[in-house]
Length: 99
Image (tube, rainbow, N blue to C red; front, side):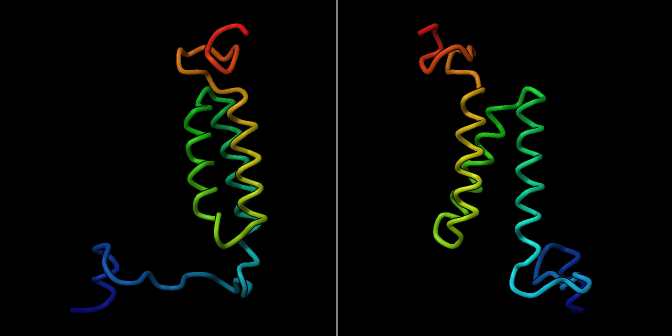
């Protein structure tokens, strides 16, 4: 079987399709910025809880390997959580009630 068939069927390694990509992950920081913008847009569109969950997943991915990225996503998660609805659907206090 042709290795390209494996890739087309979701098996095997994906080919490197980068064109003149810098070595050493130099493109990762701009991508993180783009993802942070997308999280903010989700929250603005009324999907703050989803944005928080995705930011938390990014934190988990970066926790061990990239402290700076972890810090960026952790800070975003906390900013987004401040505007997310509480357990009762109200965004007016930490317990879903006016405090």
